[in-house]
Length: 283
Image (cartoon, rainbow, N blue to C red; front, side):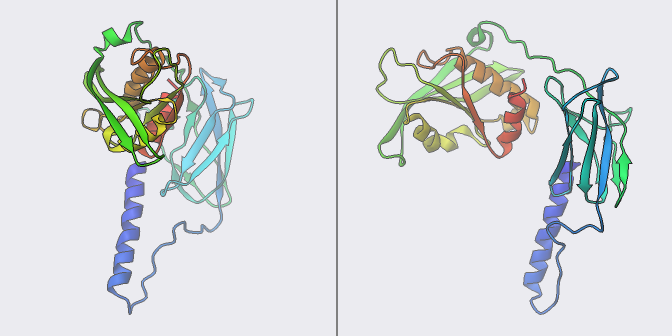
């Protein structure tokens, strides 16, 4: 798997560095961060849906350490990725309005393609299926048992005198109790104040980022944050994205506070939550 490739690569690098440190009088050569291949190859193929070409789809292959090689399909659905180091790869494709798909066999197992120097390898066609939009009920707060669990005031060292009113929420969705939803508002808001919405998907537990959230809110925005349910969802990116989508829709719809402007939000993420954010934006 991609995860195993990365873990194995990092582990081999670390063991080599330890060996160098333990044997300073010996010549121990570690593999380069990106070995220079003896020539590069290319991968070509088609991306289809029901036998028809999918135009402007992105096709990606990644090296063991994560370096991507990307191309887009043309009007015929054809792509060609050049300058790929020799090795084994699993092509993955995605396009607007379609779910991402990796090359796989009839059993659903990933299919490897072997890239050789100075050759264009023809890959089997990648087949995409249309995305199905997530349908949510009208009254989200009632449907998902939204409740406020705490309210308090917090401060941050930067910017100067930064402070916010924090409200903690929880809701039930897809068999789990999501208790990592937070709303940060500037203190002493006017009764009719309407603030732009910043929505953050944190990579780790939401309350560990309280000073960051406070700093954002102190700039005059409604700052809504959520973090993944790592125990209930594990590394289920789809599940985390669906949780975040419910929270985002409740925030945009005014379910968390009348002080949030409706309709639009700036959505942020980073590190592990970048993967969640990528999926969230396509729901």
